[in-house]
Length: 124
Image 1: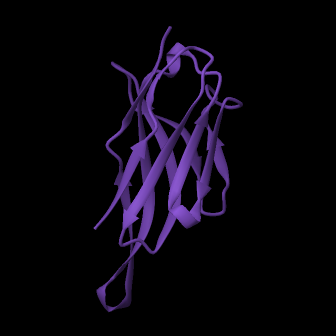
Image 2: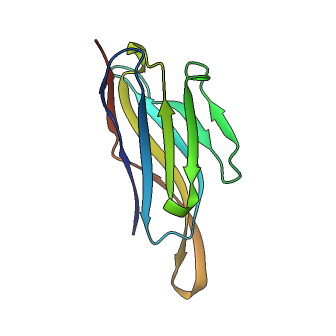
């Protein structure tokens, strides 16, 4: 019983900004690495940015300098701040999280979860 839910997508003009949120909830012991992926129509899903538990980050070349990934551990939430958006950023954005859950009898186990996606459309 855990899940991740994205929010914050929408329609924005070129050059505009959006902030996406990925909130994890449920029986979670810790959130490890979290990645933002996107999938445009007719294209494969691609990694946009990733943040580890020690806050190391990785960015796709196409978004480096425009997107910033961050995390708020107190809120179990990871953010993707996007500025200078371009039409080619249009896609469904997905959150993927590696979570550790505490199961009965003191067992800890790692799970991987995908969110349902949030649409980002950059258009004038």
